[in-house]
Image 1 (spheres, helix red, strand yellow):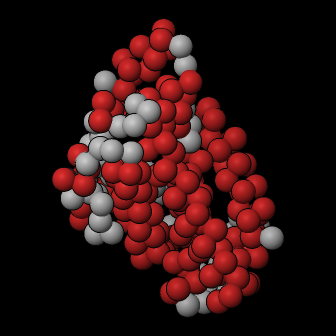
Image 2: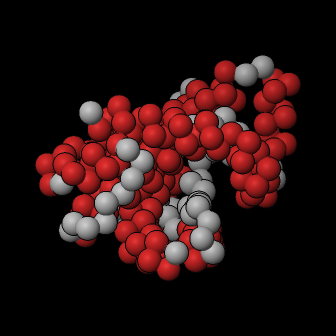
Length: 220
């Protein structure tokens, strides 16, 4: 277990910081493209992880979970977006929301292509739900980056507020459902914690299967 925790710390945490930073940056970029410069004014159009990480939810929380032998989960600082300044408003917000997960999917594809070139053996292990930590640091970092980015893509596409997938559902839903979603979103991080500890365990087998299926498809 200690060895596993060590690998998670040196490979997974750097990969997680890269994935989250680019995810949040692209929320900001798309918001800016659609007419809202709020995130830009807050310095969120940046590759610098320090612009996006939250000491508690991005650093302390995953560290505690890793050291406790639990699956790591992290969240960045929310990107400030003014709905009323966006083109297309609700649909604009849906585009802002989906930009983050799609960025993670694109990153996963890029990392898989690089892994094919530098360590095809590690990629074959990854396609079988295993990680081979006997090559270079780059191979380990790439393998964990694929897992993390695919995981973030699938997790954030779940249509539960305030996850990104809820932006799409909100734009397509009638007003009564929108009101319920707004009430859940007002709960903020509490809603995420309730979902992680109550709802997520129920759907985690489906999430894991979807994650591995997508990795297998992209790796071949």
